[in-house]
Image (cartoon, rainbow, N blue to C red; front, side, top):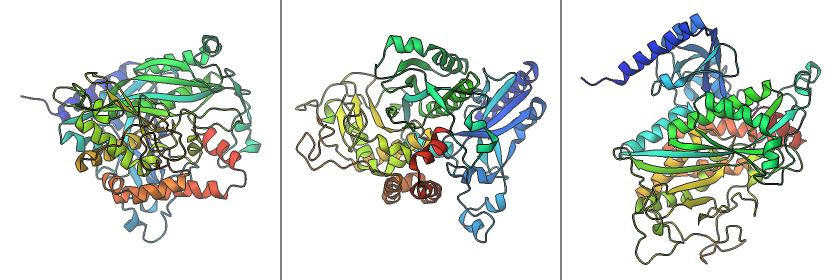
Length: 500
């Protein structure tokens, strides 16, 4: 008799219970990824945690309604809120339940916190119904659409970020009670390396102490870290991870960001996944998402073409990608404006889209071209053939980032779209390299990206109109506060540098 997922999860829960009881853990954190990709949750004593593995942990529902400043974007105590957001009226309770698709993998012992465990959760309503605004659930639903076709998604992560040394870890400006505010001031920092010496061994040696903390933290948590590198900008580094299935990759990204920020802070450092830190001499950080679809039965890479299509050149997508892969690529291009806000969700991140900066400016694809928005990597017969999306910032919610790729790519497959020829000049002002129509630009602001999301049929159908309205409400609050800020740089110091 085959075992059900319920049987497997019950056994995993029992093993986790025994581990908590036998390992000397004193505290267990029940954590959940919010709309902005950041972890929130509650910390329970070990005895209470054992009970909560089955019954869940109560959580105020307004945590799902916060903008990036932690202000509630919906008026939950006014009439009509039950119609607009059923289940959220009057700041009612939700339940955090340990994730069910990988219960055992969701439990960790934190390497930087003494006798502390960690459980990854998802929110549900009091009756056990999943909350539709849960971003992890959004990715699960998108992956279910792939699974209906027998397909799965594989993702590899390249994440750039910045590490700084805190000038005063104990009594810094961000910890001074006289300067407390909402949001509070950013910490004062200095560089761990001066930058502008890409992949320098000397700068790596200068930065070894914090990078060792990153390495040890990631590996202790079981994250598939492949390399740590010195990036071009001052204090900028990059972490590269082995490819995994999409849901695992998204879970890993959420945990990695939170873990390294905590571990580094304890050692006197400040890590930020803000795209453009608030200093004059910086380089923007990107999150390059490598993606391919696979046959769930055989594991075959469905983007791979056995042999180049006859009579094609390298600038034709069918020279490298399968017919389905080319259609998926065309879908990413066709819906790029609509998905931009899921890839770059902060007002800060749009300053990255500049010419000749190894960041995209226009909606184009290229053959191994790091200036194009989409970079096709591989060749006929190469099992590692993939599409790299260079649109994302490291602060993005990984569940929404990856779900947006699926919705856009599937729309291209369903419509049988054909991508244009690849570009050789991704920063050209007018026509692309193929002499076709003028390339469409990526949205320039968070507000423009939100409008594009609302107007994109594939995004609205994929995420659902209710989720799009919910997301727009929260992100519009952020854009409005950014527009109203007299000092835009100070806004970003407090809103992003201090918190992301």
